[in-house]
Length: 224
Image 1 (cartoon, helix red, strand yellow):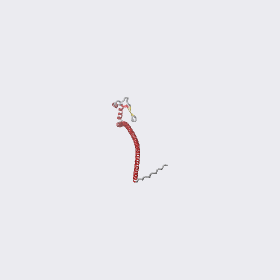
Image 2: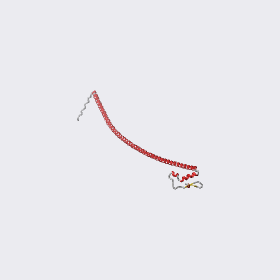
Image 3: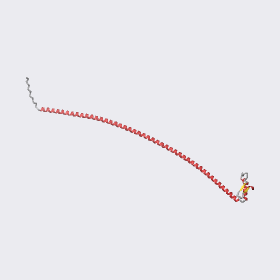
Image 4: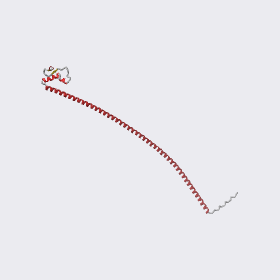
């Protein structure tokens, strides 16, 4: 087996002749000619410490590399988890935002619907009030017209009654005046009659007091 270990002239490198078959287990790997030659080379050249340092350095480097790789893998997994978590959170936030927007739109629609109903109700009430006011105004105007007509009719009736009363009063006054005139005339006639009677009576009394004179007989005229 010694012929398989070849050292360079300056001793800086070892040239191993690889076997044609590969080791299939750790035991066969340790018993492989390459490993056996490597160990023999280290032992023959008293390089156990250097080999230990080199192997320890390699092991540490590989360990650090594995640790770094594991850390990177962990960081990658963590980053992926955080990314997934952030994406899920963003998706959840988007869903929440969408739900909020949906609720807001629904509330705005409900509010608009309520406002429209309130406006329609208010408009309806205003129309009803305007209709009632117009009806009241019409009734008031009708009543005022009826009142004016009644007052006009009453005034006309009053005027007619006043006219009739005036005519009646005039007729009564005329009749009273005529009666008064007739009474005055009758009184005057009576007075005149009484005066005449008194005069006649006075005349008779005066004639009775004086003696009667015989009137001379008239001479008869001789006929020729």
